[in-house]
Length: 503
Image 1 (cartoon, rainbow, N blue to C red):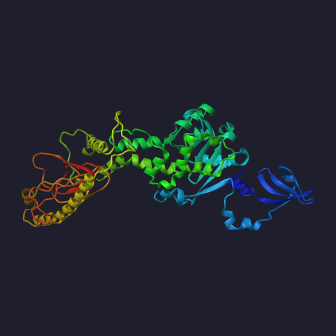
Image 2 (cartoon, rainbow, N blue to C red):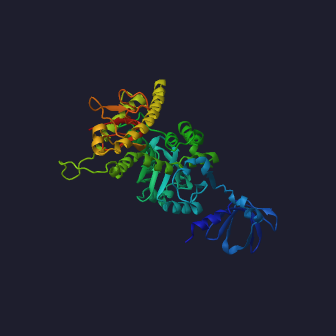
Image 3 (cartoon, one colour):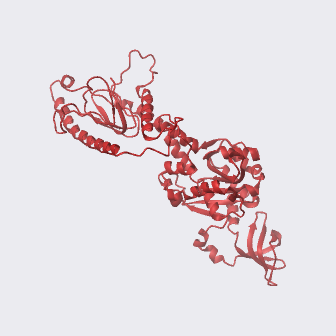
């Protein structure tokens, strides 16, 4: 059976002028097609013996051919000429159109270009394309057509692997394309299909060709779920376009996403452009660029959706470090009680809701206007600067308190003196993104327990960081929660959010 390399080798001769010798005559012409059954189709054919140009294309069978010469062989062997793609295959530079791939953990086989191939006939291109796609575990899929939403007439189907995009011309291939392999790919449970808003393509595939799309990762749904978690349970007032999702999650500059904007404009204004044959080269590039971001986008969205889970697992792993002397409640029956860190999830949700309401306008339906955030005020900027200054002051206080601890540890009865002269210390494990720094014991809050939102509360009477009797209060400027823990050290968390203390 022919391999994919054989197909690519024969494909490299297309659009090349060759000299072909048969038993009767000598011909020159441009290769239109070379098949594995040893047949060649030439166009622009000239019979050299009579110097006569023939009309149309001419078919030559293998048993008729005695010799084949390539007049411009020097150009073919030139590496510069070899690097230029033929009209059926074009290349998109990764550095220009996928700059985020440098920061993703990809294997060593990554190439510098993403090739896209137009598949508009069955004889040579369709078979190798389907075989290559069937070997993949994850592919990106897009579509373009004429009509309204799920009832549109499918004209183009784009399937992207890691380094190649296949543009299937469904308008020319018809239903035969799905019978010959595309339906097996789209209905396969072993190939994950990454799509942005799968409703339209799923509806058109089922209505026109009876294909049931399965095993789909929808980036539009994942983006909404991430916003839902980030805001503590609020939904956005609308879904996001592919351009918006790529720009936000992959941090792509807008000037790299002009192709997505052009495609969205064509969908709104002139959908019948997908009927044009032959399809203009810029339009082919637009279709290829609309699917090359889907696979990296899936990885980033999965990380974002699992961020809270990952943080909680890290707390489980670091539990022994925060609590050197483990204790167990006498009333504990089996050790399956909900841990303190997991109980704080509800507190985190409420804190995120407060932030979301202050950051986004709320509609009458209780939805957040995601792309119309409230403008930041000068007061917020001033408070941020004040928090940073207070953080510096707290760092100064650390050295003073550390010296007190060293002096206390040199006494005859260090444990008794510490319990008498020093305040009760707490440990503050934090849920969120940031880091913890061990700090000296802290004075318990006076007048009962309270919550502190993004502030530093020095002890009454503490005038400066140089005051030997001053005590530093813990701070938390991160999306997380701090709770009381073990003796004798505490943790200061740097980030964004609030601090919650409990006995």
